[in-house]
Image 1 (cartoon, rainbow, N blue to C red):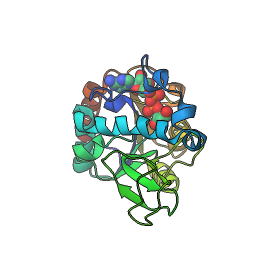
Image 2 (image 1 turned 180 degrees about the vertical axis):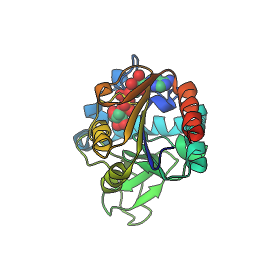
Image 3 (image 1 turned 60 degrees about the horizontal axis):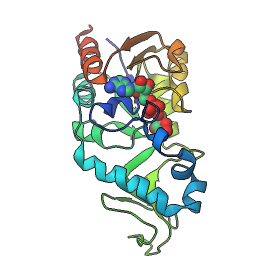
Amino acid sequence: MAGSIVILTGAGVSAESGVDTFRDKHGIWSNSDYREVATPEGFSAKSDLVHTFYNQRREGLAKVVPNAAHVALARLEREHSGEVTLVTQNIDDLHERAGSKNLIHMHGELAKALCSRCGTRHDWRETLSTQVPCPACGKTGGMRPDVVWFGEMPYHMERIYEALRECDLFIAIGTSGNVYPAAQFVQEAGRAGAHTVELNLEPSETVSDFDEVIYGPASRVVPEYVERVLRAK
Ligand code: APR
């Protein structure tokens, strides 16, 4: 039975809920240029375009629900005797809506806004624009999605590395292994002696770093794997 578990999820865990992935055919990056909509430079050049990109995705949250993979991961956290830390690269709110509590959004959250003037964060479900005044400092011109863009430092890295150093089981789910630092978490966990597993639709870029790989749609392979972990004595 694994002691402490660290799970890393990517867009693939939300795909069957109807949330687009990034690098699949017709993925988000095949329709939008990440340099325009997911970098600080892009935001300072065309903030309205960036706000429109995230406003559309934020509105989409109301139209999607957690799938069996999100539900299974929340069950694992509830029923497993050891610590379960869920690190997600996703900015949707499906893990929390499925009941996950010990959850780290390393790339930020669509349902949060950040004031770049005063640094405060705010729950945010409405349309956002730079004309919106910050609820804390009252200034306009600085409100942005609380999302980590390319070239920015992911959130909670110290807490994530601490969990990786302690873990006995590392499970990566629905991530292509293209983006760092998340793509090298498997090596960190391996160095700590953890058993490392990839649950995905197809081999990721980092498949060779894993001890075990299981392919199939997350809504099937994640509940099956969670059952296996909970049954293991
Ligand atoms: N079940 C399991 N895996 C799936 C499914 C599914 N139903 N559908 C797709 N996948 C897999 C794909 O095979 C792919 O390996 O999910 C992965 C999605 O990869 P990406 O689209 O690259 O998404 P992700 O790995 O989360 O991207 C990481 O890149 O653009 C940035 O900030 C963005 O957080 C994102 C980061």
